[in-house]
View 1: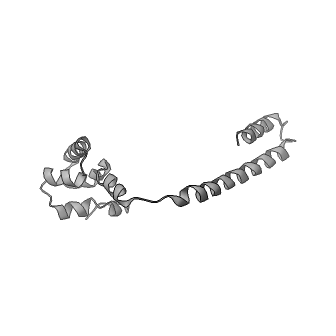
View 2: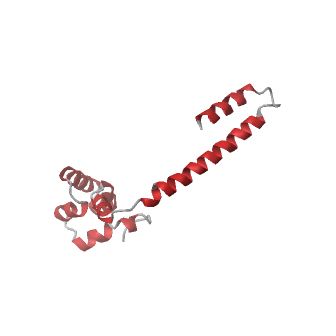
Length: 127
């Protein structure tokens, strides 16, 4: 790939005016690079990515501690309180919902509704 890139760069610089006699070399190396990239992507998917498995428990644990969740609380409790919750949860290594439950007057059901990551990916404000 690096050799093809270098060849294409030099060939592009070596052409005269609009009549670049290096175009066949450029085209050949671009097509060869595309083929190399396609083959390597296929090999990567078959040899590595295909065997990956997601540990849902680790995913949910990391997601519950993600400070970005507090942005959904901004319209309800205000930015300063939400930032305080995010900082405390991060410092203590705890889930955002647990810290928010302790530091706000919102009940657990309301917090679960507001902090639902799947709902947050759809955009808009939680209702």
